[in-house]
Amino acid sequence: MDKSYSKIYNNFQKFINKINNKKLDNFWIISDRSDFKPLKDNDNNIITKTSNITHLLHNKFDYYINKKFINIKIKFNSILIQKFKNLQNWNKFEFNKIKDKGIFIIKFNIFIISDPIIPNNFSNNIKFCNVKYNINDLFNITLKFKSIEVLLRFILDKNIFTSLDEHINYSDIKIK
Image (cartoon, rainbow, N blue to C red; front, side, top):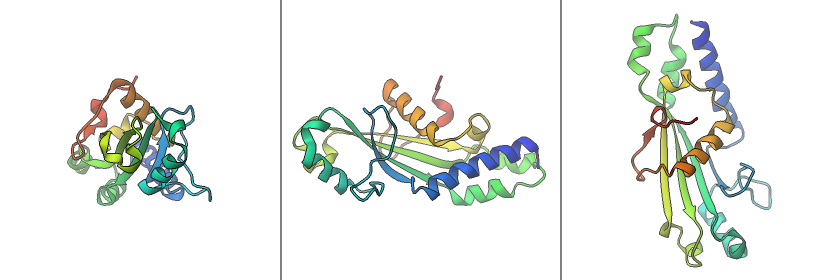
């Protein structure tokens, strides 16, 4: 196996392990905070449900007004990950068959808290951005949890949004 290929696959596997081990495949953040940490409940568990956020808003709505609550979901394509892992001896022909396929997607559901009615109905003021990473993208970036924060801040700064069912390829986003 090509040395750079091994390094890239190992980096990707570390990213997957971190996401899975820390249960970061579905979490909430507040984008207007300086830190990028998943919101936690009173028991120090990562919040994954909208109902927990609604409860949080009911308790401190005035504090959260004009903030952006973002639900981040990361979905891995396990079949493609296995194919990527099984590429032996850097088989360029096999690699070319899968290089432009989506190996994972990050879904950002962005809720803007601006109306007292919204705590009862989150769907009133929501934007989406779904970013698909192809295997080829892994050769151009070093994935870390921090990469998600950088991507999110860029999306919000540049107002890059998709519909709920559409996605944008990571390679089409020009992060500087």
